[in-house]
Amino acid sequence: MPAAPAAPPRRTAVPEDAPGETTRRLRPLRDQGPGDGTAPAGAVPAARRPDPAQGRPHVSFGEPETYDDTTRPRGRTRPRTLTALACVVLGLGLIGGAATGSWLTGDSAAEAGSPGAFAAAGNLWHGIPVDALFPPTVDGDGAGPGGADRTWTRIAVAPDSGCKDAFDPLLRKALAPVGCLRLLRATYTDATRSHVTTVGLLFTKADAAGMTSLENRFRRERLDRRTDLMPRPYAAKGTPAEGFGDRQRASWTVSVLTDAPVVVYAVSGFADGRTVATPQPAPDATRSGATTAPAQAGLGHEAQGLADRVERALRKKVTTVTRRPS
Image 1: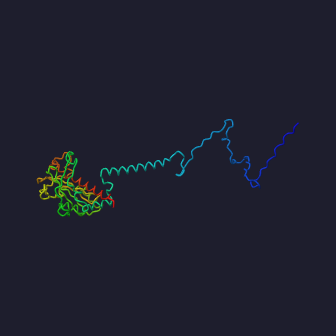
Image 2 (image 1 turned 120 degrees about the horizontal axis):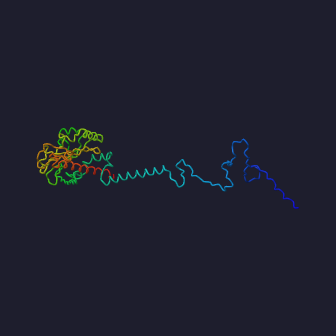
Image 3 (image 1 turned 90 degrees about the vertical axis):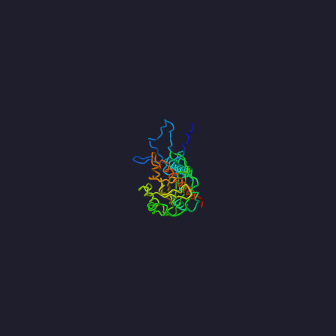
């Protein structure tokens, strides 16, 4: 009867620091003793131990939580980043749209109120030709009663001067707080040569705060509607405006700018020299249903339409000057 195979020799654990060992061996785990409240490292709780009868356990890996901006889960963009990007794109779109609209319309809103534009406007009276401020011909598309077109032709330009004789005493007193640096005036006639209108640009010595204060007073006290504060016309001899005096004033407008040290005004009347018993400010004479003589003749539209276009020409020149490379 063959002999039974000998049992393999029992292996004895060798300490980690045993001489001659080149590989570290894990120490054998001890079973959890009774009353021990901690599980040995690597032990699996009974509730989570896989059941051999159910086969291989199913394991799923959740996406890691991230709490900083440097670590992002793959395939997902942080909502905060998307929101920031959307705000940037929206902001750039609004800015670009505003700038493009300003450029297309010729509006100087982008420069309005800036110190450079304010100073540039104050120096225009001696820096550009008179034709740039008072063009020989001014087109007033839709400026007449009922939206009719108007065309004005310049018939006289007054020498640049001070303000001593250009305004009635009360208007001169009302404008005194901003001072008078230079006054430019020109007189126009309409296509029928039956109306005459003087338009003026008063360049003041005031800063932006001074112009704002004056504009607030004019609006609050309605000084631009008082007949004793009408500007005077420029009646040039040898022109259809030769008989355009104080008693011929029919309608007027006065506009105090706050983004430039300038007061823009216009006063209109009949070219045949007839007197007007009841002058009417342009805002009232251009109102629908107005029945006064200035309103029926369209003289309110003459004053307001011409003043508006001269003011626009002034703003465009300010824009050109401020955008010009130094």
